[in-house]
Image 1 (spheres, rainbow over the protein chains, first blue to last red):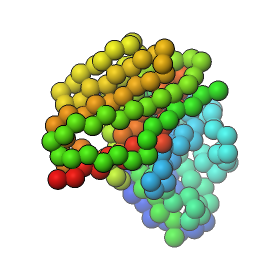
Image 2: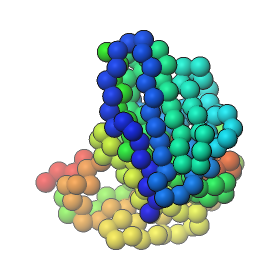
Image 3: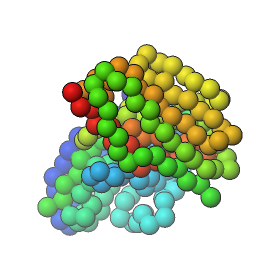
Length: 116
Length: 109
């Protein structure tokens, strides 16, 4: 099956700094990537959808200037949490899909962010 | 509008069978997914149903009734490692996944 990787697996940063999380599709071309956030004991919350080469579409309530998403190639998308605060501490998960009309969506292993 | 609902928590005994239900409402539908998520890990794909009926995969089976907006995940011969959250999600007309809140399944010896 298709593999999606995320880096780093976990990160601890100080309040006010920025953190970049990478999501890569290793053996397929991901025309669409999704970024989710999951707080403890809660379900996945879609943050944004990004298509290669175009601007990401953010869900209501997600600050696009705080959560910068770049989908520069068919195998890489990045999420940058800018000026991180403790309330941004969460589990961030990306998923990737091969193309419009293709239903299979593959998840990365997730990145646990802790902001101190 | 769109919504999806599943029980918050269920408990079952090792070796037994458990059925996790999921109901949904949507105008556009491109299939129903079930994912398993262990604590601290990302979801892993279990099943996908787009037509009515039962799909069996080893110990796990998934059922869909589109007319009723209803699906269930059936787990047989439960093992302790099956303790996890089970997420159902439907794919809407824009091929976006709409997620349920997840059902935490607790397996007791």
